[in-house]
Amino acid sequence: MNRENLASIITRLHFCNNTKLENKEEFMRMKKDLLALNENDFSQKLMEFGFYDKEAS
Image (cartoon, rainbow, N blue to C red; front, side, top):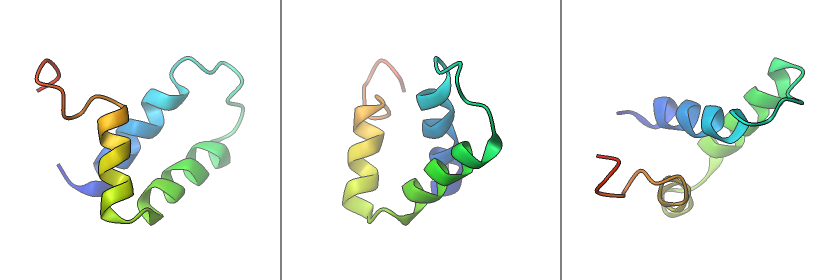
């Protein structure tokens, strides 16, 4: 899966329980911030959201 798709998934997971998301700009800002991370920081975010867990694979 490419980095942009992963950033979209992480952003959706982040906002899935947030009923206060009122506009798309907030979503796009977070996705843009994720895409701006270096490889190590992006990998850390993937770990935080369980993408490296064996159960999630």
